[in-house]
Length: 455
Image 1 (tube, helix red, strand yellow):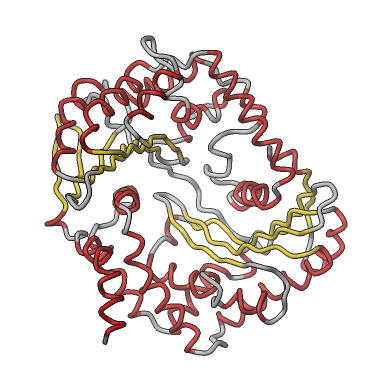
Image 2: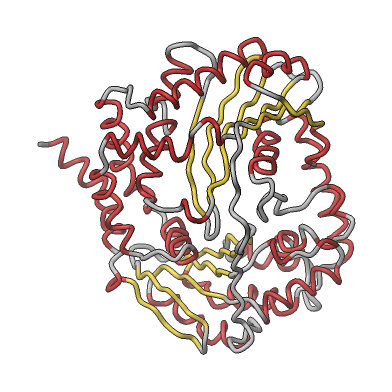
């Protein structure tokens, strides 16, 4: 009983936040046409603000690829009144965390700090949105950093594998090209291009603001309305993508060669078409069972039983118009064939129901037990609300998650494994030395690439 009380006390704040998923506990406002979602949380004198923009890097034209990502990253590079250093020093004085990020479909800008400083902070943030100039000297520095980051991937094979796998597995969809562009795109990032991109997001793109903290956070209404330069009548565009669903014709195998690699980084997975994005909780349960921790199925088969790798994980995720499913691991060069064989055979055995029921129950307990901890941080909670709005789902799904996970049977997991991870639909990407080609050929026809093609 004492242990139960201790655990309950530890979990209570997370459970309380989870309960706030109820529509009645989330307040919504209309600030002169800008929609606002507010989660009241007066436990601490801090706030989180997330500004959602309903467009992302798909707005970048051929001669400005990577511009959206660069624009949000360089928003604080300088205005007509303040230099980059002055903006940074001012926001640092108030202890503020801030920054933007982009995906293909959407973008966001996050700000957090002390509520007592929210007025001067948001004034400065709005000033940046309204008057960012993207000084050429700051762009030059950013270009050097971007080039160095991409070129350094040759020494970070795991990072390179993630980048390559995305492009190859999402080929023939609108979502394969890197959000930040490639080396050849960096030269096109100029002040004029970034200012035009900012103007587009300010004036044309739909926005929604998500806030958490004490009621004092609502004091920024006039600042948002008057100083950010946003107008609802013009700002109504929402990115929606219509494309021909991808068809799968057998397993595709790619070897991306890097010099002198002593490990093989493996990614196996595929794109999910929009009509496959359903039963969200079952997708999470299935991927968690397969590769969601040390006791997951793939981890036990790959690491515990055979010692082929230190780690293995599986994922299944969704965006608005597409999703992705995959398995990731690595191994030494000599055991590449063995690793891929274990991945293939493990996925096949789960599809046939050849696994102990207690393994699935352990994964189910791990997923449901850890779920409330996702919402310990208000920023994560707001991020979940944004994702639900972005994908057109109801906030009540947060409350229903645990019960839905508990409701799925062994047969449901078998069927979802087949739907997500059928071997004849997968793209296999291996990043490593060219000598790995011989082992890969046993699994089918292999297409070779130079890693530089993806930078």
